Structures are given as structure tokens and as C-alpha cells.
Amino acid sequence: MHLNHWIIAKKTHHTPPTVTINLVDQDLACHIFQITYHGIVSTVQCFLAIQDNILYLTEIDIEGPGAGYYGSTLVRMINDVGKEFCRMYKTDSVVLCGGKRTTGKYVGQFPKPRTVKAR
Image 1 (cartoon, rainbow, N blue to C red):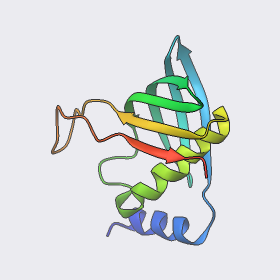
Image 2: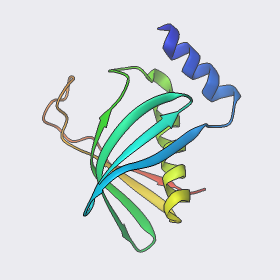
Image 3: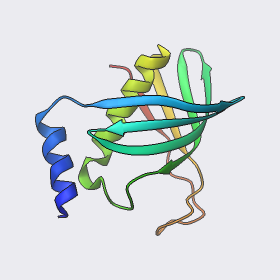
């Protein structure tokens, strides 16, 4: 395990989540956010829509610290960030739909959508 993976794993298991989401730019439905999770900064570009008190983030493209950086804490990070989006937009849940993969083992494929409930 890389040192960075261990630091993130240790932080996420022993402290409450530290999530900061800032809207950097917006052009109609396309939004660019800067997300800080336990001190690690990522830039996220996506399309945003709200329907029936559900927030939809689609065609998500993430520029982050690098492949595999979050390791086993990735699911926890997705849940924590999703809950913060629900809090920001005052919705019951958020549906996260990734864009087409451009790197890695699954180039050209879309990841499975994930739903995160506010509570």
C-alpha cells in the first residue's frame, strides 16, 4: 500500500469526513467544481440537473491526484462527497453518472451509475 493510501485510509476511518465543494465555473448545465476531500484536491466537470428532489450529476470527468490514489477508500469518498452535494443543493439524493472512460483498463466504457442518499 502506498503511503498516501494509508494516510487517506487512516483519516477516513478515524475522523469525520472533511469535504469541501466549491463551484468554480458554470456554463448553462455544465458545472466545474473543486472538491477537497481530507486535504486532497480534485477538479470535477459534469452536467447538473435536479428533478423530483433528486440531483443528477452526469458525464462526470474527474481530474485528481492519479489512478488508484484513493484505493480502498474510494467508496467512502463517493458517499461522503455525494452527501455533501445533497446538503449543498438540498436534495434527498444524488445520482452520479460518470462519463466515458478515457484512461485505464475500461477505456471507452461508462461506469455504473451510483446513487447516494442524503442520510
